[in-house]
Length: 236
Image 1 (cartoon, rainbow, N blue to C red):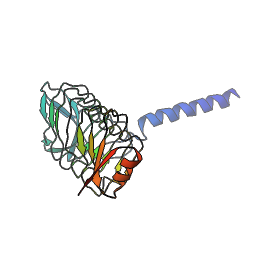
Image 2 (spheres, rainbow, N blue to C red; image 1 turned 90 degrees about the vertical axis):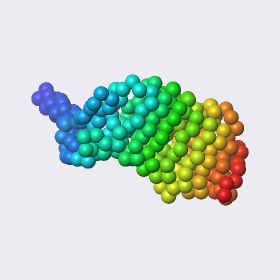
Image 3 (cartoon, one colour; image 1 turned 180 degrees about the horizontal axis):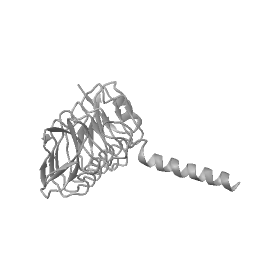
Image 4 (cartoon, rainbow, N blue to C red; image 1 turned 60 degrees about the horizontal axis):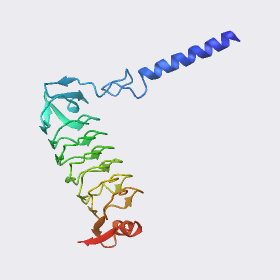
């Protein structure tokens, strides 16, 4: 009996060890291997640290500067900067950020709790805004969303300072996720296109001001406004 228990215990230990080394932890060539932490820079200068995604692309994973007005470079060491990593600027004192058009994704919490952030220029080719990207950015009163965006993560603009927001018409952005505009203390106006065909429960909720939904007549957004006791204003 003891031999059986010891054998089982050894198998469990070996399995745990194997999972820690392989599984979702893959090499840069997407082959099974040791786990790589994307937050650890492969390349860096005095201001930024970058993780090498592949032979052509970098992810910005660390901000080491002290400037309040930041412009992210579109390339470094002959690599294109195509992503901003998790929590890179979270809690920093930055006031403005310019994101180059090479960037396609901004990962979770990238600008979380940047309390002084007032100006954001997003990439014209941005496709994904992760969860909580601008959560608690209370000084951010406006932002322009490019039509290239395919996904807004949960809590993207939650508790931000947005006064109004326009979601552009897009064939790919058809859903507004849960809690995207949750607890926005200054929000009064949300403009939505006819291409939005689903707005999740509590997407716009717990906001103290009366919200006006602007959208085409007969659109899903009009129905959403009526169902949730928001004001509705028809757009062309």
